[in-house]
Image (cartoon, rainbow over all chains, first blue to last red; front, top):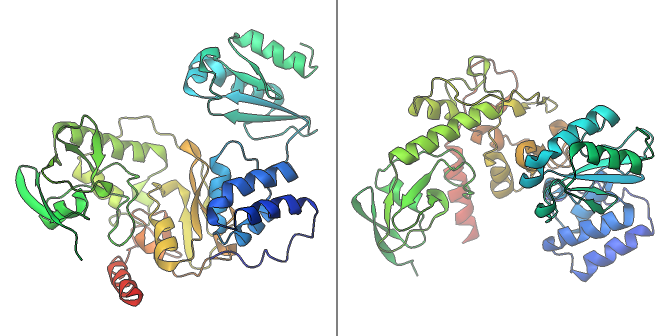
Length: 167
Length: 238
């Protein structure tokens, strides 16, 4: 049973047009969910609960299901993104090659846990599960640019230089 | 129009069943017990807990009995040293994953996880326990959800979606961060879709879902309602 209370809630925003068009194109079928979430994230940058509630009621899906799908995939963000994004791969190969240490270092140095953004909204840290470049392990992505096969010290230097955080 | 009858061997016994049946159903009809946890008569099977894994001759891997359809001439082994070891490890891993402290649990003595542990002779946990700090959602006026006791069998999710039709529950995140979630991560008491029927509370195998005000060992699930509801719904659809 879709939530009814959300239908009137979000004020008309032109950005919804794109999302609505995606749902229309797919005939508001429940299977259109992932496609719609993509469109919504492209339009708004992230998915807040009002957005998810509206998508749930339009596609006649239970809100819990929509949240389940949105949190299952690393690609979808439920919080706004910072200016820069650092993605750290925690797939098996990257984990073994020491990316767990990078995450621990990020927590210590910038007080960031995966999924969080710094107070000044400058940096977001994301954990990804395998980017398909296991031969380059350990892999990090600075704003989508891939860096691999580096030692712990080299990686931290790269991150600091990228952020103008002089060692 | 009924499905054809197939014959197969389970634990050395010749048995038969309808082609639409699963290994678990046929085994049960013939009095062969296979341990289960996530499976519940009346709900769809998901094969989530892996306790009903059985050996099938000619296949190197194990198969979950609750979602494996029977085949003509198949030879199934439901109990072996290998299966016992795996099942014992699974139950121990379930204990180590969250905080299952039987001594102070509302379901003590009426818990399926506890019964499994007893059946497998588990007197200690061979794995390091994670002791995660998880929340207890007591926002609902009549029920409590304690994530610490949840084994993620998803019975509550299925009964809410399939029988009650509300689908208030689902699963968020993945891997080790998985949690049962109401609506859009709303506190249970504020979940608009929840009808307060309490079906989820009565299908929970552990003390994760309980009635408010129950003390240690006082939570008794009323299971028999489920086959009755399923039968009535089937009648309506005809």
